[in-house]
Length: 400
Image 1: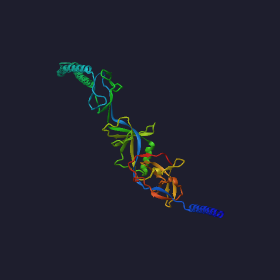
Image 2 (image 1 turned 90 degrees about the vertical axis):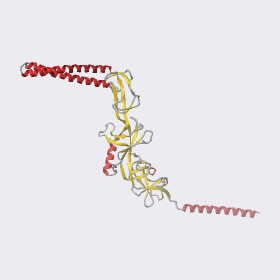
Image 3 (image 1 turned 90 degrees about the horizontal axis):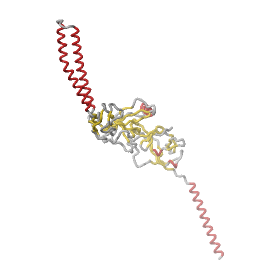
Image 4 (image 1 turned 120 degrees about the vertical axis):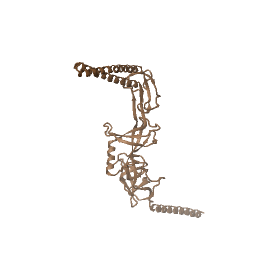
């Protein structure tokens, strides 16, 4: 019986020993197996033609503005418009009491009639004296007095004609009319108010809103940078659509119509170091109102050799400089320092650091290091790897 238990114990010990030996062999085999090559996704950089744009803030202003002020003093009898409505050129807005001005006109007409009534008799007398002077029937002094009286009578007629015209003009000014067509704002006076000629406070303001201006400040540094790029040939001027401007409204939506860049101001604002760009936009639905804050997307030019990489392929080193990992021809990872210009859609426009044909790692950067061998698979983000040439370009943060 004891021998039976001894044999059983020896068998159990043998089985355990064999298990330990086989486990050690398996671990040695696993430790000696080769490390698998990391797999990364990369894009091959190819030059593309893109339209570079810049987005600048600006404010709208009316195309035409007319401040309505009285040209004669008097009492407002009527207000003949609805506040906030559209008024047309020549429409009567206010009526000033015309009675005093009508009286002045009537008085001037009467004086003119008296002067014209005296003129024929004075003219006949001067003509008779001229004939009698030839026969020595009157003295030279008498003729000179008659001729002077005629000239004075003619001058009186001209004076009263001018007075009548002035009185007629002033009477017309009692009807205050709209000098331009547009939307009229609130009225600063009511019926019964006393107004004075050329007073500093406007009775109302008319603004023409279609078309409408957008004034955009552009820094002189940005202007010089753009001029330098055009001179160096990095940007090409597209004459056909270069002056077309898109507009982004305050709520982030794009305005329906495109505008046209009219001009750049010729002077620099010393307080801001910028020049004003004036853009004109159609505004048939009165969506744009004066004083609105908007963003204008202005075209700079065409870059026919733009190098674009996905934003997720670019990271920052401890100093904040942009870097990217590429795969060289030997299948090894290299780190490149980049100079980025701006974002175009979901990509960076790279000025230097990469070249045509470089394979830039987009996914898998966390599991590789410079110098490591990798397996490259094409990057697929679910859409075509093509930049939209009309995307809004945002200037990047300053980088080295």
